[in-house]
Amino acid sequence: MVKRALLSVSDKTGIVAFAKGLHGKGIEIISTGGTAKALVEAGIPVVPVEEITKFPECFSGRVKTMHPLIMGGLLFRRGDKEHEAQAKELGIKPIDLVCVNLYPFEDGMRGSEDKEDQKIIELIDIGGPTLLRSAAKNHDAVTVICDPADYVRVLSEIQSKGDTSAVLRKELAAKVFLRTAAYDALITEWMTEGANRGVMLTNQRKLRYGENPHQEGSFFELYGVPSGWQVVQEEKPFDGAQGKLLSYLNILDADSAWNLVSEFEEPTAACIKHANPSGVASHKDIAEAFQRSYDTDRLSAFGVIIALNRPCTGEIIRKIIDQKIFAEIIIAPDYEAAAIKLLKEKPKLRVIQHSKPQNLKTSEVRRSSLGGMLVQDEDRSIVKESDLTVVTSKKPTKDQICDLLFAWKCAKHAKSNAIVFAKDAVTVGIGAGQTSRVDSTWIAAKRAGERAKGAVMASDAFFPFPDAVEEAAKSGIAAIIQPGGSVKDLEVFAKAEELEIAMVTTGIRAFRH
Image (cartoon, rainbow, N blue to C red):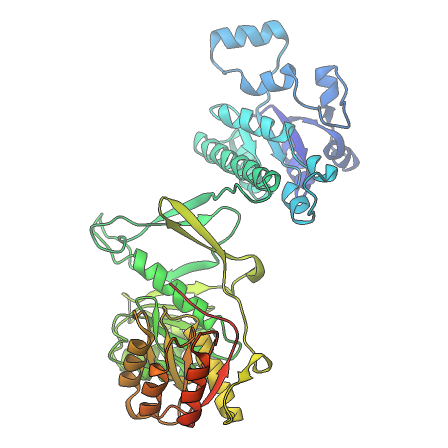
C-alpha cells in the first residue's frame, strides 16, 4: 500500500492535481524546495525533507535528499526480516512512491556553446537520478514516476485499490532507467563536445522479416524523438500464423517515399520500388498527381509503395482498386473517410499515416557500417532558380526551369548515379543505382521513349564525360540541370552547346547511397 510519497520535480506540470489525489487517499507527502512551495500554496500539507533528515539543504541545493533516512526508505527490502529489523533500529520509515523529473539539462545544453558554462554544470542533476534509480531498483515495493504523463494512471490505480500493480511498477521502473541513461548520454555528449554520443532505441516493433524471409527484423524508435508515423491498416497474425506485417524493406521504401514527397510544397505523389522512385508527379489535384506518377512506369510499379503529401482521397483508393494496382503500402499525412471506407476492399494494403517531418534542421541519418555507425545531417538543401548558373548560350525557358527544379528534387531521392527525365512536373523516365552515369541515362531514355522529346534532365552529380549529354540529346532532351565541378566541365558545356541543349549548374551535389 502507498502510505508515504516523495515529490520533487523540476517540471511542475500536473503535480498539484497529482498531489491532491494522493492527499485525498491519506498519503503523507514529503517534498523539497520549489515543489514543496507550490504544494503548500495549493493548500496541500507537506513534510519538508529536512524535517525527515534533520539536516538542512546545503551547497546551494546540491545536497537535499541524499541521506540514509531517505535513501534507506526507498531501498530496504520489504518482507526481508533482516532489512525490516535494521530499518526499525535506524528509524527509517518506508517511502512507497517517488515522483521526480530531472533538471532540464537538455534545454541548457542546446542554449550554450560554452563547455565550461557554470549554469550548464548546475543543470546536471545528481539527487534526482539517484532517487529514481533507487526507487526503480526496489520496484517490487516502490512506485517510481519520472514522466508527468504517468500521473493519471498511477493515481487511478492508487484510488481504486490503494496501491499500484506489479506490472505497472516494473514498466515505470524500466522507463526510469531508459530516462537516466539518455540523460547521462546527453551530459557525456556535451562534455566531450560531441565526440561521444548515445543513441537510445525504444518501442521495439517486430517486423515480418528483414531484407529476406530468413532474416529477422525489428523497428525501433529513437528515445525522445517520436517517429511520427502510425499504421492505420495492417494485416495481423491469426492464431500465431504469419500475417502480412510490415517488413524491413517496407519500412525502408516507405521512408524513401515519404522523404521524397515531403520535398514538395505543391500536391505531389510518388511511386517507389526498392527505395527508388519509379514515378513522381505534382498537380493541383492530388488524385491526378497520383495517376500521373503511376503512369510514368506502370511496369515497375508492381508491388509499389505509394506516397502522398496531401490527405489520401477516396478517389485515389478507387483508382487503385479499379486499375487493380498491386500496392504494398500507401503513406500519407491523413485519410479521408471515403478512403478509409474503400480500404476495406484492400485488406492486404498496409496503410501508414505520417505527420510532416519535424525539426528538419537537426534531423540526422544514421547507418551502421564496419562495426560502427555513420552519422550525417539529413540532406535538406533547397535549390532555387536564383541558385542556377546558365552555362550555355541557350537559356532554359520559364517552364523548363520549373521542370528542371522538379527533376532535381526527384534526383535527390534516387540512388546514385541518378538521372531523371521530366516534363510538365511529371517524371517520364528515371535511371538510378547504376555504376556509370551513362548507363542511368540509357535506362531513363528507354523508360521515357517518345515522352523524352522536349523533356528536361537532372543529374545528381557532375558528368565525368560528355557521353551522357550525347545520349540525352538522342532522346530529345531540351535542358539539363547538374551540379558542375567536373574536370571536364568545359567539354561537357561545349557538348551541350553543340547539341543546342540548355544547361544549368547548381553548385551542389545530391548523391544518395
